[in-house]
Length: 416
Ligand SMILES: Cc1cc2nc3c(=O)[nH]c(=O)nc-3n(C[C@H](O)[C@H](O)[C@H](O)COP(=O)(O)OP(=O)(O)OC[C@H]3O[C@@H](n4cnc5c(N)ncnc54)[C@H](O)[C@@H]3O)c2cc1C
Image (cartoon, rainbow, N blue to C red; front, side, top):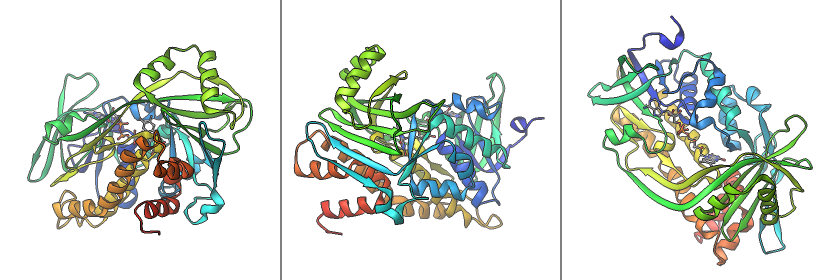
């Protein structure tokens, strides 16, 4: 019997979804709460760690990870494996299309908030997935994959999950004292549990691809504000001697559609015109992926025996690079709350533990979600606040918390 097939019919914590949120939380629970038995159920097959490339989280995107998130990964013992896949961000260059002046932020100006001299780092999701899943394979977490959870039923002792394996023909059951739903945006499980979401459609799309450059990026991230929205070029590690950066280009839906139709050469010419020459000549562009932009917030993130993490709890505008960083902090504090679960006397699904987690996360979530919802639209505007934000840059505000605190303080009139 393989690890994937072993019987985990009763566990302390069941996590549904093995994407960035679910896999990170499972690793944190084994690190901080070894007293808990944990099962992770993922509907896609995971025959070996490379298969994590099939999961939606680990597609062709790259993620800007803050210094705080890198610190969490380091605590989990993942930094040695991640380091080779990460491109450090040591500088952020911010510019405004149509205005000559730009601003540059450097890691050494933000020393207390940096990790090993970086403001943050960029890692391709396709590299992050195997690192997380390879680490998970070394833990006692029961990995059930492919395992599609079709229904959950909440009771006084937690949750009863009904799931099917890859063939889909045999239904199995799993009882968990705490159910963590990490199944992504538009979660059918949340709907089944009667958890509503609040949604704002931005009617914009993020176009994402990898571009090749003639010269090295020098660990510099670029952010450029245009009339249609912000765009970012993020450093990536070299591959086969090629200089590479990850592009996130925010545009109105029609403009995005038109860009998707362009042949590579015409796309590069348009990109170069819009972005300028700060990063040098763009010589290649990979295939474009397009992501609809919306804000989607679950109206409840916890109940007795139940917690939501990741995109199913909050799906944010991606341009400021906040979604996964916020999720990682949520997962970290959920694990810290569960450290206190004394299994002889109480359950990890006990309401007061989860309420404490909720109280702990409230302020950070409110600030981060408010920032990601209200700030991007300002970037198309010409008012004073917009200009102040443009000078600091969304990425700078995300990766350099003291800068953000000082900006938020200034904007709120506290002059912090
Ligand atoms: C264009 C873009 C760029 C981004 N850039 C950044 C960035 O730079 N920095 C940052 O911090 N964040 C960024 N984000 C946000 C980040 O991608 C999300 O935080 C992350 O994807 C959260 O993943 P998740 O695990 O919650 O959901 P998902 O990736 O959707 O994973 C959910 C998993 O659950 C599984 N599943 C679903 N239903 C079931 C079921 N019934 N049973 C079993 N398994 C199931 C799915 O197969 C999947 O593997 C970006 C987002 C976008 C769209």
